[in-house]
Length: 457
Image (cartoon, rainbow, N blue to C red; front, side, top):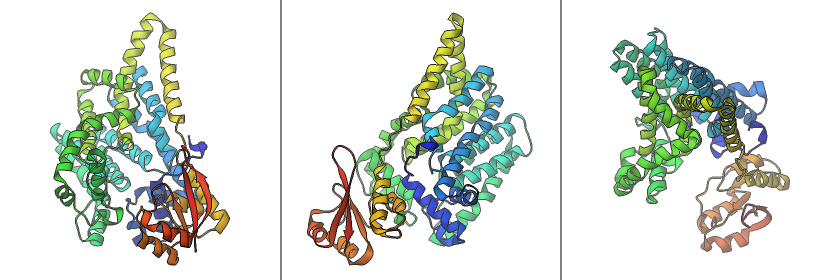
């Protein structure tokens, strides 16, 4: 997957920008990023070793994705899986298509998933084995997960509550305290920077996106405005749309979780869910608390398949147990049949993982064409910020579709290039574009569509 050369994600561009700033010592500008600083900080630390920022981002994701099997093995052992189920759980995570894709990209999902699994493993060890340092380690992993993705802090609730309900209140307190120690500096920074108590700059933007995606109503809070907009303000602005979103996403969240898990693993997971209580009830309660708290969280905020990647590893405990049941069932009739079923599942998963199309490959072509024609360090206005990244230039923020006023400002010197897709320029602005823009090239998209590259005079 990592060797396929797919284009960087749009989020990845912003992660690398923040990593650049951290390495340059521009901490204030780096922390002003829309995304939390954990993943960019690790990229900045790794870049001198691997050479190249995009390579560093992929390396962090790849290593984190591969290491995820280590805490999963610890969880599976504490959950009492037999040898077949244990091996199936680990191979299942290694072959799960969507976590594999995210581990091959400049995205935070793989690092976040590793930290989530570490936190659950340590909490399970505190719950079952009573190890003294385990709750502290769980809290440190939880706080670190928050610095990678804001929803990491949600781990405090299921982990702490399960420990407290099991009579391990001191362990629960240690977990919460350790998480606060790690998370507090960034929370206090956000308070000082925004003059508001918030846990993330993303929240209002993500919630408004979730409402729009589920209901088709309401405006999306921009990234620039998100940290100045409260959640209650988003809900109050569109209460009926939010109610519709809750109704729709209460079902969609389970479908997205199943999709991220991979459809072929879902029946195995369902079987494993039914077998777990008799196997290790305490660890099962912990797994249920974490997985379903995230499923509920995304139903409340935004349903997107990749958000569930972090809990896929936990679901593999159930899928592995379900596979062990299937293996025993088939092996009674034929060992060869059991092996064939295992091979078929593996081939399906690998085929799905490798079947990703490079639908956004045009951004690399467009960026390199701009660099070829105008050189590096050009200023570029494009709906997709990756065009400027591949051009080695600087992106100019402009609302799309572009109206006449904004286009006039671009033509007056704000941008050297404008990248236009269908509908990116309003009809009223077309005469302005004809007057000040020269179409230098066209990049094919799909179904006969093109991206037009305009050099602005």
